[in-house]
Amino acid sequence: MLRSLFSGISGLRSHQTMLDVTGNNIANVNTTGFKSSQTQFQDALSQVVQNASGAQAGTGGTNPAQVGLGVRVAGVTTNFTQGASQLTGRSTDMMIQGDGFFVVRKGADSFYTRAGGFDFDATGQMVLPGEGALVQGWAAVNGVIDTNSPLTDLRVPAGTLMGAVATTSATYEGNLQSDAGIGTVIERAEKAYDSTGVEREISLTFTKAAAGWSLSATDGTANSGPFSLVFDPATGKLDPAASALVADPANPGSFLLGAVRVDIAAVTGFAGVQTIAASTQDGHSAGTLQAFSLGADGTITGSFSNGLKQTVGRIALGRFTNPAGLEKAGGSLFRTTVNSGNAQVGAAGTGGRGGLAGGALEMSNVDLSSEFTNLIIAQRGFQANSRVITTSDELLQELVNLKR
Image: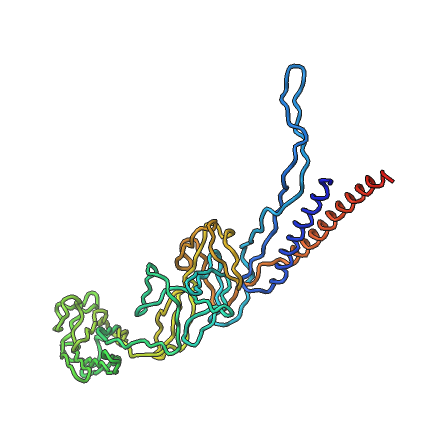
């Protein structure tokens, strides 16, 4: 049989594969996180009709004469260029800006995906819809995340509790008016909490006497003072050594009120300005999770009913030396192969991994104009190879007709 028949058949098969790949790309034009594929051809074996010969005395060298035996598909390569972003406004929708993959788990197997349209199941686990794959990351312990610890299933259940923290320090700042009238009394209060979250009030009373300002403090159970406050006339700053404070030796300018260290080191004593006020305290009551937001590094920050925010977890990202070596596993998931290498897992924005954007999704990177062009190329290539087959058949028919 003619070699051109088999060359034409190989061309039909290869262009049919190209047509299949192009059709799949077009079908997934609106699939979240989908990465298009490209078909690459290469020629098949070539039959040597005449070998090459070297130059000799009186004669020149000759080139080899070869007849190709068709075409074959060299590979179907995945294109990992960034897809367009689509704003959704959903707090559970996340988009990777740059390289990297979300890490998810199904059973004992790990998979990787660019599709960040997550949901929560009944137990508060973050999952990939349709697949039920569990999103992997690091859970926070008292607001602290250890990215060196093993990955775990991310869980952000409604009603997550933030425990109460007892107040151990309180700070007062501002200025006590040095030229205030004798007998002037200023009271400033700050909330404080015990270890169970019960609220109490720390109250400081500043009284102006002829010798200067004095200070008394109470929290309803413990009392301190009165103390005389002495300010450096050159700088207006509090002089802890000269002031009659029951000082905390490790923190000059402070005193102990029960178990709470009250810091007034930043208080000044200039004339004409009265701005003394409570600044901060480090305790809080218990609270439950009401909402959460996503940071560019994948940190999930919860907003609690006590008005505070605390880190509850961080999403992990994986990157690969050769992402084109990943194998598509369906459901917009990829799995590792021997040629992709192992996933290098870490936090977003580190180690070449992209950042994260909340309330947005990465759309398919399929370019319809390019795909329709490939569709035409595949169709014409298929037609041309079919003509080779019909032409070869006509030649064979002529040979058969030689004997009548």
